[in-house]
Image 1 (cartoon, rainbow, N blue to C red):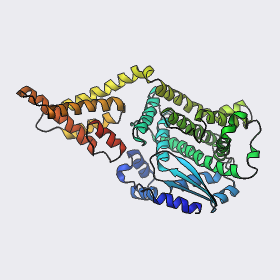
Image 2: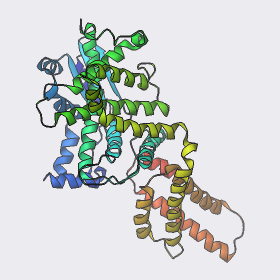
Image 3: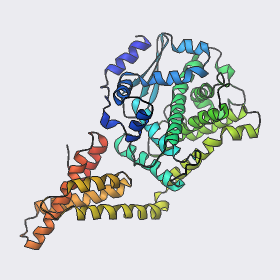
Length: 428
């Protein structure tokens, strides 16, 4: 089987997701309008084009012509598969290599990069979210992934310039993933491992030399220097290097929530230390290194805070409990004010609930939903004779349950909807 046949066969075994207008966020719709691109054309593009081709086009200007020729040959095939689990893997075949890139990886990385980008101050536009809040938003994305295996998270404010940074950062992070796999192919090429500097091949990397070598070659490809005449090349390099570290910091958090890559990869913290050492070695001096790593150091500060939250959530409980209680107060008020009449006020609740549930704090919200559901089911199965006053209270509890059930029933089908519905004791 040729690499192209292997990729095609793998893609054919997975049902491809078809994106609709409901899947496109309002800010993307606005961006399409600003670019005079119709939403239908945009949907056609993302539904028909293989995402890996976008990545390769993004990388081509910085790659050596010989490598471009290799990537376009029959020896290598690269393709995206519709799988919500973030993953990139390489398959060695008798006559070449197949690289498979999950769509879940693209969505997961982009969701995180958007939140990171809200920390970028561009021009006179202020940074609205504090460091602690930014870390909380990202930690919740990891929480949702652990719960549902999909990229999901709360909403937040982001401007157009920050969205451009988010897109660039995500593209560079994904480019590193792809180039890491290409790095494995380069490592298999006779004589390539000899190109690794002797002081980089230390005894403590021998157990995973193939992975460290792939990281080395992959990072070199991402940084690239063939397009160094481009405007603002220093900033371009900063974002490219930031994308590399960003991806490894993501892996570090995935390891923290229980994903195990130990059978094939060294710990992300070791890979990160190795990349830093190797990259710093090629900088002319400390000033050059500090300039290159300026953006990545800022991102690392955010991830340090995320790791603190994931490591010791109790130490941050007071801050989060206070914010979560404010959110629950809003939810309780909405449930109270939208019930008690002949029918629940679905329209008013839907508008208020959309703002409440998009804020985050899922554990607290899901717990409150479970309380509403329990009260409803207790009423249903209660055999006690209720007086008129209790009948009124039961009616309110019934309406509150209906409001929540109706709101979440209208969400797009998927793991996130199922998790919310399950908290109400309801299985689709």
